[in-house]
Image (cartoon, rainbow, N blue to C red):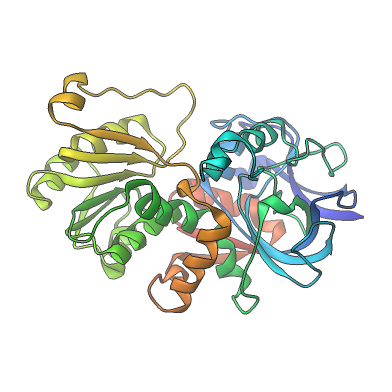
Length: 367
């Protein structure tokens, strides 16, 4: 079948994207699903920094590529057990094979065949269903239809509005998961979140959910700090030269847990410096591969510090996405507050200018 989607053929074109038009809306031939795969009518797809990092070249991928990884839709055709036409699904951006070493240990985010397929721009099986175009993280959700591995899909409540459902596949799963799964924050322990985009505010929501206190939010955008207060932050700090000192003052000497969601080595160093003795620093952002960070090596031992990476929120998507949706429906995880705007396929370049400027939280493409 012919699908209409947003194809990136060259990374690193200059901003504004409204002028350089890195995303071209094209008609692409999509082959039918093979064994273990689904044809899905895409209903909504979130615009994420992981998409932007491919557009600007800081996260190199094989070209050309049909972008979009945070998405939801309705199954049209199933070639996989457990799924049927009409099922509502959300996608995880790492397809989990279920049988490799990490999968056997319950670490689906680290699936080895899934990572290899994502790097190659294929589905989990190693094939491409898009003619002459690579898949983005096994999803390619910026199109009206997609073929995906069933290992990338999780059945969800069909009553959930698509523009909200899409957020659970990346922003919510990553941010909330970093708090709940990776750090396992306990009630009454202090926390700070550096960066208040979709993932950062999701981490903030997760910290509120588990009862972190005090809870500090850090960003450069005043409106995001205001929203963080409304969502449960006890303190807000405008990012600047005194950030670390202000966070340490708000947390009586340093946070028990610090979450870096910006994707910056420099911010990661600040997050580490704002963490107390015996504390844990969790990094969620994806910096350019050339970036490094430096910490006093002796502090890891003498202060029993921990630095942890968190990918996909250390999630098991089939378990966590339904759980987080249930918490949202119960009023305990107000994910809808993250939605900044809905956009159309023809307005994606302009929407990524907004994302790059840091003035939005989560824009969602509605199809």
